[in-house]
Length: 114
Image (cartoon, rainbow, N blue to C red; front, side):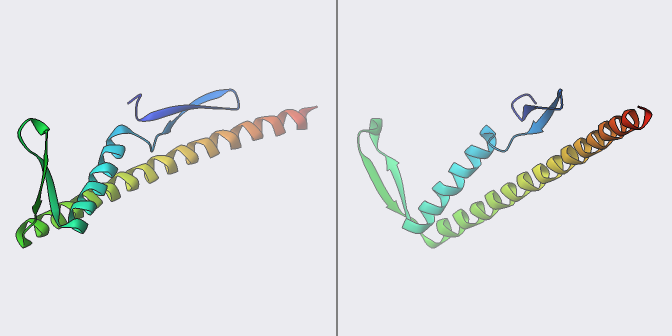
């Protein structure tokens, strides 16, 4: 979880803030870009023996359709990830708001007593 959150210090208190630039998201973004490029060019590049040469193989209709299906799956995964993060950020800011309200109320009470 340490990788998924970052520490932020506000009003002398440290909070855990969800991170967006997590490794799993970066991998997913790269995967989406690779699939988009593959679909756009319609050619799969493969390394030949020992990776010394590269060979382009055209995609047939079925392979293109499969890549489109995988791309849709990748986008669905991205949407789930962003939705989860939106909810995490909402919880974080609601909690922060409540704590700030409580701190302001204490300060107001102290001012009223003086």
